[in-house]
Length: 119
Picture 1 (cartoon, helix red, strand yellow):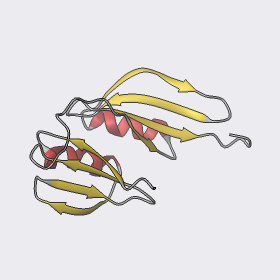
Picture 2 (cartoon, one colour):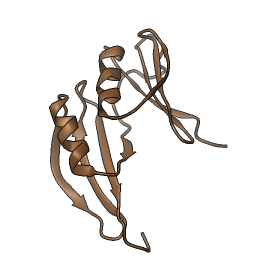
Picture 3 (cartoon, one colour):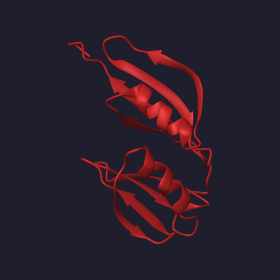
Picture 4 (cartoon, helix red, strand yellow):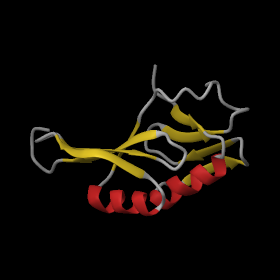
């Protein structure tokens, strides 16, 4: 078994897709407001409209994106309407992570791996 993709259910899928595109993701496929899929390395991140989703919208999953420059992406996310909450968590040799709410109130995290060996 392998992970195929992860998706968020959004009331305004195209608006939310614009946020993630401006944050740095590339759209691979879009079916109007029903389904927007971003390019990924092994698994895809997608946004589904309410009619396309199997979820009732009970936001219980957290999507984590790996970034090269955490501060740069946090500044960009904030400028695009995201709400950063809590402190940036330093996990030593593993890296650092920050929590935020996207413009449609989904909780996501941005993770920057440490340059140190052993993480």
